[in-house]
Length: 493
Image (cartoon, rainbow, N blue to C red; front, top):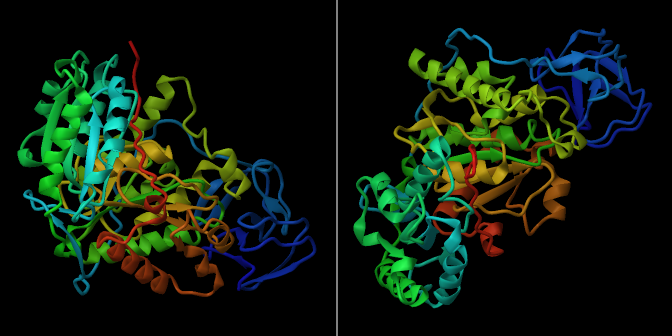
């Protein structure tokens, strides 16, 4: 097992793969450095003297500048490094990409829906149009567990606090997201549960649905029912009687849409877990499939890499807007655009937002950007997509599901138990986490640091995704975790 790694040949720092003691001699290519202090796992040390004000290079790009002189062998972190990030910028399109070569087709067993999309689960969902009926939705779900027969995978309610007392874009975002989930292919049947007096009532939500499979959706307005629990159960039973007869059939991997998200990242995330997901993404896209990269604030500092991989100038302009609109959102609230990374990120070795972003965007692999989506938009074309959503784990994961993702890949260096509305595969950046949190973690990407190749791990992850798509439960599903979070952007009345 390696003790440290220099990610790019131009890097001024190396990253400790395991805790290193003061006095350790480190041979990095043609450089010999003696550590002047202890270096925790995932943290950086200088490979040469770095002058105050000089840019610090990691991943081949600046992650900030030295706030003080840094000697070779010293720990490089928040105490001596500052961000270079600034506010809204101007960009120029400098295309730098190559289309991936097609690879051998692959398949999984899924549920083919009328619109041609394929679900990887056949679940019954209860979606409230307003938070006022959350408890009713949950009670109906509890009473409907006997409906889990045949090919039905489960019955789940998705409570939330929205649907009323919202204004403008905030309300619009909510309506789009709920409509997206009502039409999601992982749902064999959906009960839409309204109160009746809310702004986003059922009649309003119907306007956002467009062409949908009416045999798979039922609506109930609680204020119009004498017994909403009994009526809800009856409607859900109608859906269950149909859904339980659905059968898994072979489907091409090109039908897969996979969300990609990271959270609780550490200094190993950009070295192991995120590159493995990037390798997976390239593999799926080479077979005609689709992946979604989101958490826009964690693109800051690495955005030009994505911009120059846009397939054309129009997508480049959309990506510029994606980045700058998010920065303007921060600034409109009097906040700096680089108020990141989190305390947990810093404890794990991530120093600046550029450091975090350059690691985060490794999940996108090398594919060409083929789509740029607003929050609540659904995927319209195959290939790598950029989606507008915040860095918040559950909000961003839910956004990828609403965009059409049947599965989410979630990389983490510190661990998290949550599950979003679709199967959420947890990928550990380091083996100690995978061994400690066996009830949370589905895949150990930390093995990359132990000598396994990126190609082998990416192919193994691809095989695991196909297994999950064919019905294998992830750890969060085994625990019964199904969560949803909606992006809040506006005033509450």
